[in-house]
Image (tube, rainbow, N blue to C red; front, side):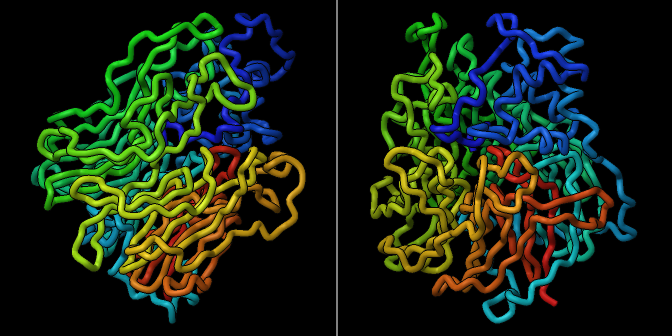
Length: 614
């Protein structure tokens, strides 16, 4: 999503940001535990598990690495919360949050046999350049999917979420932990063939391609650096900083065509705007084209013009604009037209622009915009908007309806090439690939900043598989409709719907009082990207359940509750939680699921699960 996945309008400002207690006259709570006073003053209101908080609980954060937390409050999206702290107090805060939580980076023994074959079933986010998330290379079908069994579990060290989409070949699974580790695992047993340490938290999907003569994995980290790593050995090949601003970040996957990489650039000014003293906002989204062999930047296309001074906020802070239109989708490659297609997010300050909440077609060679389609005009939003409105909220005030799901390039029966794109507004749009003309639009829900279509849709034959998140937030005029839908590719008509149900009695705060894994989860919709085979649709829910549906009629053919502890092949303590972002991958006779996603108060976890036909 946006650098900081897109934020629910009603839940946007965690604590009214206290950039420095001394700056507001607030007293620091007394505590005998070093760092706890600063945590209570600056962080607790967003991370308690009570009420309308946004961040992971303290318990979830204590499953992260010290380095990950330190990065967040020094250079990342939480840095404004720590502004003004002295060195000792800052160190104590980070140490308190990191705690002694069992963040683990144990190095399991390497496999005895470490050969790697690179015929890829899942080369990256969209399973191919068109981002259809369709898998034709599988033995799993409607007759045997119910017999899937857990083959092995791998513990992702030092994390509370699984977000980096794996790459799967005939004998290897490549997976990254947010904490900065990249692993090559034996597909059959889960043992480690090699491990690589990026040095900073890894944020994007992994992508398999070529860096000149070498097979390479490409990925991005939170410091807006692209990494190329040798896929056979894990040795670094090159790195390239691609951030345009201090608030730039990488979220979407990296796409390759021939010798060029296409890198989407996002931004987290949306979060920094909580601070009424922050001059919001100058950062914006972009796409950069890099030489795959060297990392040299070939061209850059920005999604807004340079920001200029606009007006003084009610707090007397200089506002800037335009900004935002972050790109957190994985680019879609159209080799025939020599184009790539991306989706954009909302603007983060006034004025709103024409390329926010849009699908944009770019020329591969030059980066010039061939056409654009804007689905929601006038959408400027940041985390100063919401119930506790801050002075940096843009005049437009939302609704925050990004395109986070990568557009899918596919073909109608009459031969026309089209793009299918899901939006957080709850609308699925189909456009002519030649010029962006709208062919059909289907609304599946009212949408919110954490609702509608989040991470991805799938296309198989004549069906479009669409997950809808829609949390049960009490917003005026909003009726949540979480679930999974199959649409007719030609007409947009709904073929079937699986309406998600919580299935348990929910009480108290939206996380059941702050437990890491409550007996009844507040969140139960479908935010993770869907995937599909010829006859099956796979989707995973925020309550931690993975599903396989019949693509024909929506019948549930297999399900698995991942919210439990696991004995792992690498000895790292692991637990399942909410399933978000990368969703489910299918390859051969196996299915792969990353379980755990602590953002927005969802259930933490740190496990990669491998299922196999018996």
